[in-house]
Length: 248
Length: 125
Image (cartoon, rainbow over all chains, first blue to last red; front, side):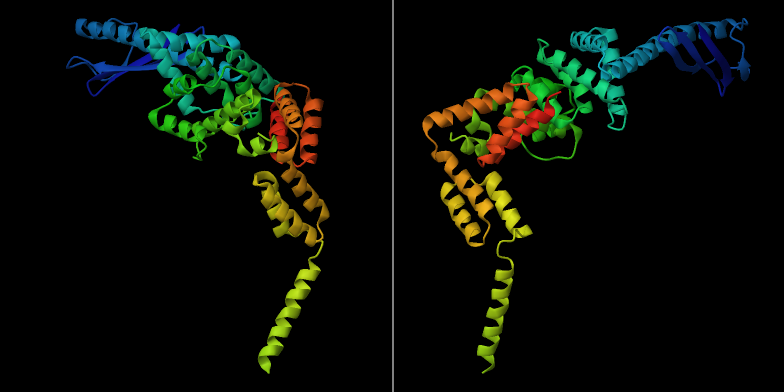
């Protein structure tokens, strides 16, 4: 169901409305140039106007449908991110599918993926959200399942969605329990960042300190990689102090 | 005449300061001890430091520093066993067991290994 109001002002037709869809209300706006001489003021969309104005309204309808479709994708993307942040496995799987299809240049997926990225950038996860321990536990479980994903891209997306909600030690153990942290995996994660964020992530992974989220994430990956190396007995490669203490 | 009096007075002050701190783990000494215990990996330097702490009446710290110095000189079988225990603990999910291994490492002066195990323990759900 669409509710909209329209008016003509300064030679332009302006339509503002909201579409009630299954996923929730999707607001929209639309404007276009009207034929010269069209009277200014409110416009009843149900009444017939001049032929030229009718053409204008037909174009407007097409334009509005496109905007609603885009708006619906945006609202859907936001819902998916919110659900994924609470550890919803289905939402994570859908995000993965969007990522995969966007890589394959599927038009709808490209729009959805852009919306997901924009929403994540505009609404970064915050520590002050009171999910409670149980939710954190669920997120840990979700990530634990996620790290078993077969491709680094899926893994990276899961990590970026869930990890900011966990503390350093928990994240380290979860990552260390997952696949081996290799150069390919690190490259895949970098591809999910902007160039600047990617540099910060690598800085954190290399042990340098930069006060940013990607850097902190890089730091966690560094610790996890160290834990994996210690488990394999490569003490001398990662921690000279422990290496000394164990007589290596 | 004034110079010998000044020297004598200064010596007296230094003597008082040193003797008053004998056996006392001052913040400065604590810092030196902590740094050595987590980052010094040279047995000779650790023993020198242990001797210095001993002279200052800090027997416990001196003993820990000597234990840390001795870590490298353990028999080969013991080193292998310790490595295995450490690796196994880092793969384990038995919290009590991991805490016990961390305590054991700490008691023998391996604070780095103990800290790593405790961080791992904190990360277990």
